[in-house]
Length: 544
Image (cartoon, rainbow, N blue to C red; front, side, top):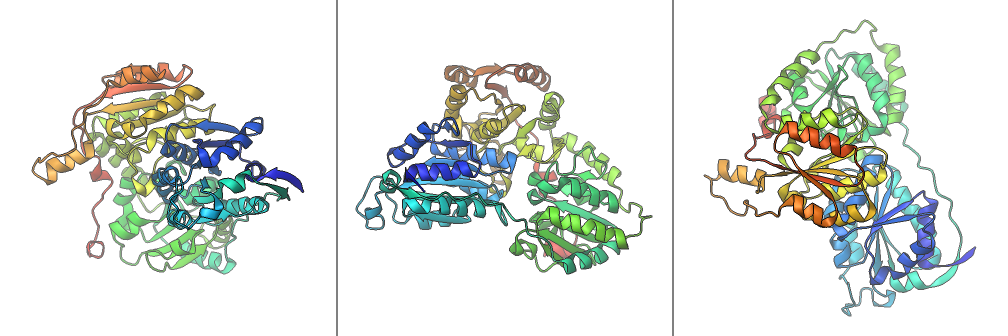
């Protein structure tokens, strides 16, 4: 038992769980917590953002790119509400982000006095945005609730959680017992489900594997299963890189769609499987095997033929030997994977100039580099047009489509990976959402390289207004600053490139230089990337 403040008990609980970085913004109800961080600077570093949203996105980027918990701390009320979009994004992407927020004085909670930063029911609000949320009511409760928060972050389906503590509890001192960090217990598969899945898969002639972010830690096992079955592995957004795009069996979304009508069994691993099961339609007689840590996800699109609720790695480690006992070892590929890859690679070259710019980036970004997208034309095209070689090398915002998330997220990615090159892209509209975080990049020397494609418009909105609404444009034209001068004003190195060849030269030089950098690329109209993402249903069942 040691005598510490509530804030110190909270911070030491985080340190005990392995946290070495906290993103955030100081403020009244967090004064004691920030003072605690001052005293523990040798064990935890603080990265201060210029807006609460930026801090939360940085924590998201840290968690998304590592798979490990990340923490941000903000004041209650408007402070924590400013982080809601980032929490929605973390929830969509199964990112283990811990939101720490202060609270008004404990005696005023729920009484409507109109205290500074008061919400009617902050805890209830946070419970709608996270997997789990709690209030630390006493100093002695801090270690136990911090440990509980990390169990929620790491066991089962990872998603964001929230802890709050009132300002007076943070300042109060009491004797506190340390709580040892727990070890996450991955859920093992039911042996009977493994046997049933192996028998069903062994009888398939043309299987396909479809992976999502839940398979990121099971990349090695996924490749082994694919090679055993000679089955293509299709990925989209969060699943990119689980099987390298260079692997003969690694497919992007449009290539998978091309083969889908001939598939007789699909194995979904850690994926919502919305595209094939909800949008593409089901080939006649299709059998479905789902592997997912979340039992609700296993049956989201109806009961599969075999559902395995388990950690993906443990499930595949059990399934592969079970398959080896029943599988015909003379299996030959039944699907023309190479043909589908080649045809789609040719078709997507029509998406210009996005593909040319993405190819320029790929040529100079080292193989272990990390690419961070945005809700922008090159970002959409990157979902199928940017080669990815390993899990967590393509950072995106999943189904939330959170415009403006990218720059701050990429800063968090770079903080997590200081020795790896990180390149982010953005459109001019989205970049301005968190443009103030260039001050954070400069202050902390975060060597992120950012490319801003400037069309002076919300490009996707403007295309829809032109094509769907008879060119009735409203709110989609933008007036921008000179991005090069703006970056330089923040103390960020800045360049301009006017075509893919120039971008390649400038980016290559920039990657070899220290510190953050921005490259503005003026662009005009771009080809629609959507015909390779929103793919047509392949039979009447899908259309219905």
